[in-house]
Image 1 (cartoon, helix red, strand yellow):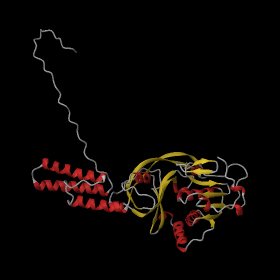
Image 2 (cartoon, helix red, strand yellow):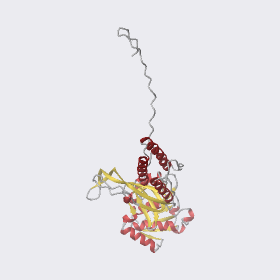
Image 3 (cartoon, one colour):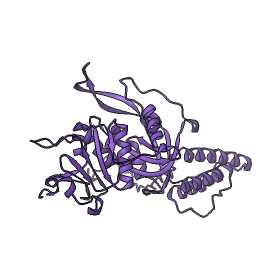
Amino acid sequence: MPRDPSPEKSPTDIEDTVSQGFAGETQGDKPAASHGRPRVPDAIERLYLHIGDRYFFPDRTLAFIDDGDRIRVRTENRAVLQGVVAIAQARGWQVLRIKGTESFRQGMWREATLRGIEVQGYTPTAAEVLQVQRALKSPRSSQETERKPTPQAATTHENGASSRQQIQGILLAAAPAPYRFDPSERMSFYVQLRTEDGDRTIWGSDLERALAESVSQPHMGDQVVLTQQGTHPVNVRVATRNTEGETIGEQKIVVQRTRWRIETPDHIQAMERFIHQVRTGELQPDAAAPEQPELRTATQCLRLAEQYADRLTTDQAGQQRLMQLIRERMADALAQGRSIHLPERRPRHAAQHVRLHPTRDRGEPNHERV
C-alpha cells in the first residue's frame, strides 16, 4: 500500500484532520527517527493488522495512521487512544500537540495526563482535572483489577452476597488489551464504564466471557451492571525478574480469578422479581413458561420437583416443606448467577430377550454355536 504523501507537507499545508474523516491527530515534540521504523510497542502491534503506516482492526476498519512524528486517529475509541498514548510514551514524547473533535481531544488529554505527558490543544474543565487527580492519587479507585498474582497457593474466600460488588454505568468500551495498557504486561480484557463518579476501567480476563454470555446482550452506550460473583483459582505463568527488573524466566503460580456477570438494569430487575416469586411460592409450577431460557428451565424444574414430592410422600405438610426447601435452593442459585439445569433423563433400556434352551440329557451332543 503506498505511503500517504501528507507527512511531506508542512503543518500549514495539511488539510483539517476532521474534514478528512479522522477523529483527530497528535504530534510529538521529538522528530521521527531518521532511519528504521518508528518505535511501536509489540503489545500494540499485536492488536492490529499492520500494513505500511496504517493500523487496522481485525475487521479491516482503519484505526490510525502512523506518520512517524504524528499519528492520525480515525476513531474516538478509548482503547485506540490509550494505544496511541502508549506509542507516544515509547517514543519519548513529553508534549503532545493534538487537534480534532472535542471527544477525541478530551480523551487524549485524559490518557496522556494519566501517563505524565503534557498536552497542548485542549483545556480541561475543573471537573475533568479533579477526576484525573483522584485517579493519580488512588489508581485502584478508578481501575478495578484482579487479585495481584503471588507465588502463594490459592486462599479460601467466603461466599455470600455481601462479598459481591456491583458497578453500574454506561458501557463505553470493551476489548482485549495489555494489562493496564502497559505494553510490557500480558494481554487481559477490560470494560470501561461512565459512572456517576467518572469513567472507570475494570480489568479481568473473565469479563470477555461475561460479555459474550450476557443474556441481555448490551451494546455500547447501554446502561449495564457489572457484578462480581466470587473467585476461583487458576494457574497462570508470570515473568520472573532479577533485581534490575530484567526478565529472566517464567514461573507457574495460582491466582484468584474474579468471575463477573454483565447485564442491563432492566434484566436484573426482572430477575430479582422472578427470584422473589420462586422463593415465596408466588411462582406456581403450572405457570406459563417465561421466554428467557434460564427462567423457563427454572419453571420446568419446579414442575419436576412437585412431581417428585408427590411420589415421595402423601403427607401434604411434608410435600410443602420439601417444595419450600427446593425453592430456597433454586432462588439462592439464581441470585448467585448459577445456571439451573434440568436433570438428565435416563434412557430406557430395551428389555433383554433371553433365549431359553430345553433341558438336554448330558449324553446328547451339543450343537450350539460358540
